[in-house]
Image (cartoon, rainbow, N blue to C red; front, side, top):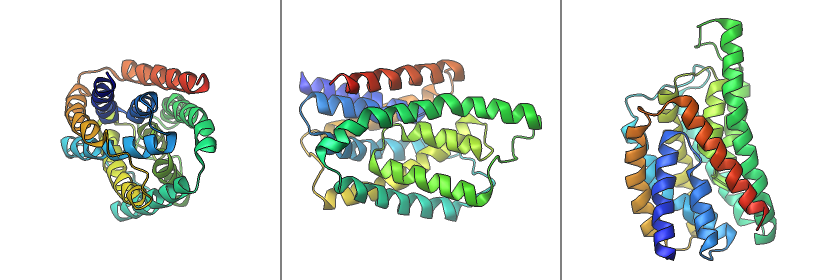
Length: 252
């Protein structure tokens, strides 16, 4: 039964991450449910979803759009440095503290996804259809994205949701283009974070391979479905998932 739960979580996690984010909610909950300690569950789920990030980034490679406020070089550096810092902070956090932080981190991610679309609509209403104009200065965008990447290296749960909201503040509105960039940055920061996790010996190898294989399959399926699912329906589903996961961890 445990293996079935892990396989299903890997597939759903990869699929969710491909379309908008939130997949780590599923893998984290599943790993904790089968008895993996919270920090190891977070690190293992993150490592397992890395192939899914890469697969989804490849699937969306032609749709990737970069924000006007930051260059590709800046984005790569921010992702790698932020991911390594966040992972390093995780290794210094106790299990008890991290377990208490999990539901609050999930709520933060879900709140960002709820507020993000509202901010976009407000900006478009104020500036018309000129969606290339960012709401943030380059320095502010750099600081914000750095904080998001540190968060992603630390927790990773809801990373895609927060990245999408951040891209919206940087002036992007095309969800497919934002998804492509989200998957690219997620893959970069997650790759360096996994290296740090492995060095700290916090990855549980028992379920890693199964999660990773199912995440790859889910990532390709999710990337294909993203073009067919309405954006309001997609956003509503992810908000429900986030709230349900937060409630579940509060009740543990």
